[in-house]
Amino acid sequence: MVLTTICAAASRGARPAVRLSARHVSMMSQTQHSGPNVDAAAAALGESSSSSDGADASASQPKLSERFAFLPDGVVQVYGRKLMLSPTHITTFRQCPRLYELRHIERLPEPPTEPLVAGILVHEALEQLYKYVPAADRTLPKLQELFRDAWRKVRLTRYRELFFPESAEGDAADGDAGGATRSEADVARERAWGQAALGKMANYFTLEDPTEVTPESVEQWVGASLGGGLEVRGKIDRLEVVDSDGGLAIVDYKTGNAPSQKYSAAANAKIRRDAFFQLYVYALLLREGANDGAGSRDVRELRLLYLGDATPVTEPVDPARVDATAAEVRDVWDRLVAAIKEETFEPIAGPLCKFCAHRDGCPAYLP
Ligand code: SF4
Image 1 (cartoon, rainbow, N blue to C red):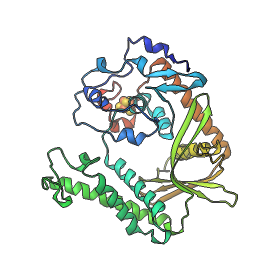
Image 2: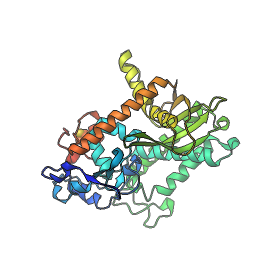
Image 3: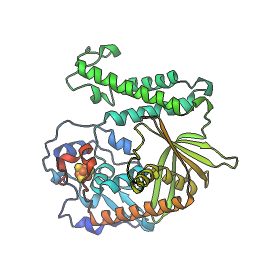
Image 4: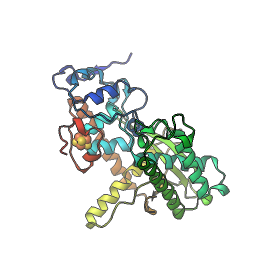
């Protein structure tokens, strides 16, 4: 029998850990607390509401004692599932612990955004291209066709709210019952969004020739237990063997522009370091023996392909930095566990607050 120790702070219950708006509570009733807590995209793409009344409904939130449990060997459970980290989780916690709590512990849904959905679908099209299309047939029209197919499947369902206001009943062009009731502005917005995404794929073809790429894997989940209850997982866009001894390159597609390097040398170095953090975490996981049974793998090269402005940014792997990344991940884990024990997820306001889906109920947000 596993001995479970409920967080002592949980029993205090006097101060709510999060102040939720009525919108949050309504959305939470539809949120599933199951499965690995590592998929940020899933959390970001749930149902949404356009209301933002900001009413305090903390009385309806779950009791704190129901949220966390501490098991032997440092394992932490959140709503009965093992707490794990991903590079996205780490970045979110560093940016704002409160956002981490709302997004990855409470899993409050967030409305989809145009850049997010474009990124998801471009990745999906590239995955299909490399998984199912013979090398000789990997052309730009084929990639763009895969994108269009992927969009057709979700534009009237999962992501309908992006370009179809609630008043719109359907779209005759898609054979949807109800006829085309969208405004010209909504139609134009969807077209512009699609054209921009197709342009990113055209940019991709200026960065590499897919007919000459031989991936070892695409969209592969990797994970490793790093001790003390810390387990990290992530999904790698593409892995390639680049050395005769099996050394790997990690390739990651970014649908935005490459970060600017117009600042001081120190600032530029930090920007570049931050840009590669996610890939260094993957290199760490592969080195530590990804849990796919492949054992330890040596990563030699990291490649960021920015499709927004057709910029590749590549660097060789520095083994010392893999060690430093392990320390960074451990530090975030320790701070996260401390936050859980204290039931304190401090909001850290910053320039990204204006994009935060939870700003309405956030005491730190200043419009
Ligand atoms: S509005 Fe800013 S401070 Fe508040 S939760 Fe969002 S990111 Fe954090």
